[in-house]
Image 1 (cartoon, one colour):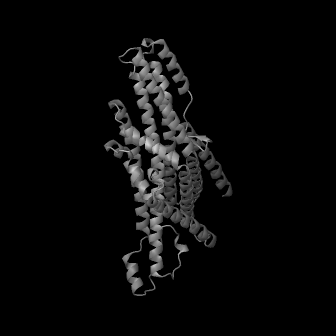
Image 2 (image 1 turned 180 degrees about the vertical axis):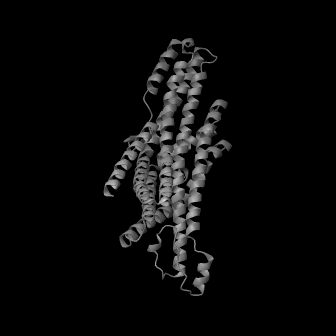
Length: 399
């Protein structure tokens, strides 16, 4: 399909990252895309098995903070593998969703009001993508920078000095690294883990931001439809009313089907994300409480920042579900507040049916179990807070 400037603005960033990872849906089936996707899967699978193997061999040597990092990396890798499997299974549905989004932007019948609404929602998705990408890049760079050997080490290594000690690799605790490994093996390990960390970060960024961006696109479509309903009665006769109403009803049905397809495609991915995020918050919270008991404020600040970031990711998903539900149900209010009393009787009766259909909410769910909205996000926060309160009391009793 034809890409114009608006399409590049709304979908260009998702396309670039998706192309790099081989998961840009219109390229599914392309041999080079499949090679890139296979590389991502093999690299992530290797990381997960490598972590599990090292955990069984060196489980007791890592510090508490390093154990939290290991759990985060391992759960993140498994989450990426499961999401990739789900996306490959639903590749036809995702391709339809993306192609229809491209078609919406390339359509010649978009009026000025609809275009401004779509651009506003696309801007929200774009800002979230840029902020997430910058955050992941900062995290990646800081990890690589902190673990990169100093030039002093290389001088000591070349002179066979006993002070030449490996200071670490990006993903492993220091105690997992053998002190007598060769320089070539260490260099290969460092590069491989750096690439693996970059792939994991890019995958998470693409999954989260593409989901959020597509939901924002749907929100823009529903709001544009509501605006068209608000102004469709301006001018014209009975035949004009009927013609415009038929177009809007077809568009409404099209958006409802697209939203349901989106929910059917992504509900398992959302379930995996919510489950992993909740587990990370609980594990990190335990370490946070332990740090508070021992007055180790370095650990407290580190763990608190991780919980805060994880909550931000959760609220992004819940906000997307809340916004989509609100925009889909707002149509009935627009129709109710329109000048329906000036319209023909048959048109009014048909609009009543549209109001009835709009009463059926569109919900994004986590595995058809948990509805993504702000009240449920608050419920998650309250539940986890209660869990932390019980654990804190348990720590006090042990003391």
